[in-house]
Length: 640
Image (tube, rainbow, N blue to C red; front, side):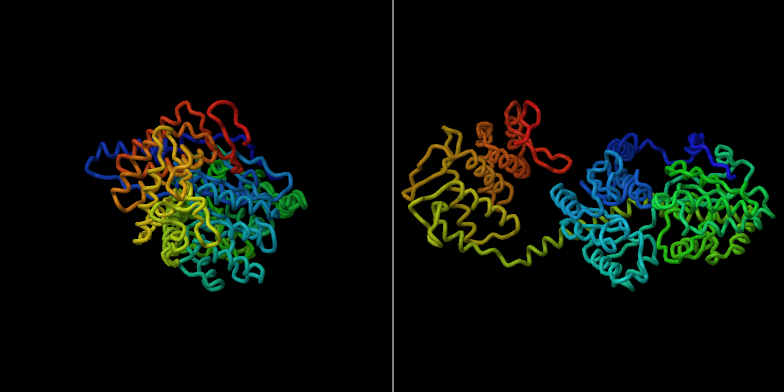
């Protein structure tokens, strides 16, 4: 029987850490590291790469066991490490009713056949401030025909979406082509991991280089190490190790290598074939370990079963790379050509393993220029000859290993993350520019209706059809709304003579409405221009404050900005007296606008700080599913 490896293997962490990049920058943090660089080189500035403040990623995620889950986790960790200040929403696709015990980083779960879940998550991401959504795409992980359910989510998202394609089909069926065409149309950018993938997308789907970007499959970063020390730690000392890893399934072509073992052992009796990885969970669900048992039986029938080793479990990255670095050769005898990417191949090249492979698409591209050896599909003799030759020639094998290690440099997760962030920032910039252009291309707003409801005093409270109803006079509520609108239009460059005149009239009305004795804005004024109250509602007062802060921030003329800032500062001293929940929301909006109003805006901000100390003004919080609730300054959270 083949001997399994114990799961309790010792590590060579001290040995492996030699030659690794220093972790001091990570421990100290970016700000500390930057400060030290400035101190040591005071005349040189440190360039800071633009990043994202909030992002989301969608895909399978561990403990679900599959290649997409592993990739999503590794990609998420790499991006999170490269953007330590960013906040993340992590969405796991679920394929079973019982679900999985996901780690706390997972914020949302979408059962793949639940349309409402796709809609709900899209809406929550839209509300959360996410700047970019990264989607890991494989047809089989989303429900519906050809994974069409993912389109429900993509159609609802309002931010840039970057889709990484793990499968690119040269001959898709009609349903697959329809789904992929729409994904490409919606996405701001599409990532493929090989030039062949980009070529297929252009030929089959008409997606050119403006939309499609090649970023290699990520892989861990380890120093180039000799195999013998690791072999000793892993129970492989004295053996020449041929290795394959990944979830076990019939399409891996492992029989090709097992059938070649008699020929290999004739020249290298110390060789072992190490197959690392658990059986694919879908295969286990259908037939248990029948496939693994069939491999053992094949090896027994050939008399080589003692040279077949299994590591029958799902391996973490550290343990997996340990085994890879202990191997002399890596083999991928896959049976089909149409494999656009292979994570196992990327890992093997990244740690500097000579690779012998069938000519599937990713392998043909990755193993060019002497990085590996290509053998025909199902060709046991060719594989046996290539393996025998490389095991016999240490110099040739070492040279190929070093070429592989160099070729794997762009696939280090650190570099993959940097390339992905650069793409995301470019997509965000382009998205914002398109929104601005769309606004500019809109017909200029017509103010006729608003001007008809206003005169040189303020804005009328009511109308009869299109005619102002003078019986109800004016109100601060509507005049403040008009003043806020003028500020918003000014921020977009829409400042016309009629708007300037209306803004000054509204400003005069709001100024007149302020009652210093009561610390409130009056609201109702008769057509005879006599005030009908001494103080308006909380909502009216807060709305007037918001209009002042918007004018202070956005109005192009300095004299009106100065007036608005001064009156806003005065009004801020009384906001703790305004009790309604809507007024609190408007106060928060006003303070946010006021913070960017003037170079000396700290005086506005300090008013908010004074208001917050010891005052019962609730704060709005978002739960995991973005349900707003009210939390007073004292006492436990409660539903409104």
